[in-house]
Length: 241
Image (cartoon, rainbow, N blue to C red; front, side, top):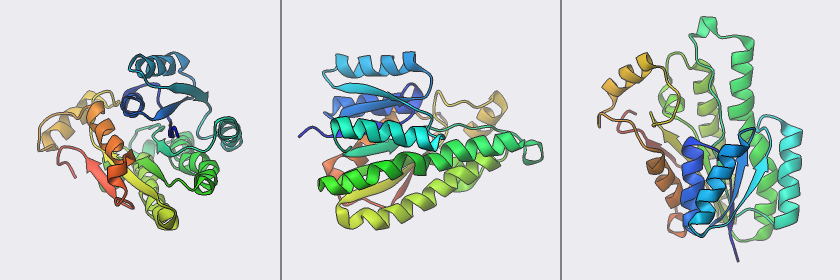
């Protein structure tokens, strides 16, 4: 039976790399986007050109009702997901005294509430399918260490770590693993030049990471070989944390 994987934020960057790599490994990809349909179409074409299968799904991960409706409709039409990669997120960086209410609310709503909004309608169908499964959430080195100018983002990404660990306990007996990947500074992530230079000086390997390196870690966690790995937070940051 084909195993499908929902990848949120699959129109560009790390999400696109994850979707393409999982598609190449034989998973049927459900590539999510919010507004960048052209980017999602490019992801889908890359998957299909490698012999994989992909369909698109669109919603705002921060919009609970629309998110639930879209996921439930897709599951009703195609069956439960075997895996979910909860990747979509935003950041609104500024020194804490300068953060606006909107800066705080948008990041928490998208990054942390998105954990609940996406996974809550997915989990019961996964359980009922009795096939086991894989959930991978995306935190950040900011959620592990904290980062100045990112109090809102660090709070959301640290919350994802706690939620991941708790959900892993609930689902372990169902043979559904739940793990968290915490990338550091990756090419194509948006950082200003000052922050990038400062962080590069702190990275022991002295370079940025690559989206495909993150995707390879996620692909391992999604694989059968990772059946005994759950409730873990795995940093991929060149030794930064």
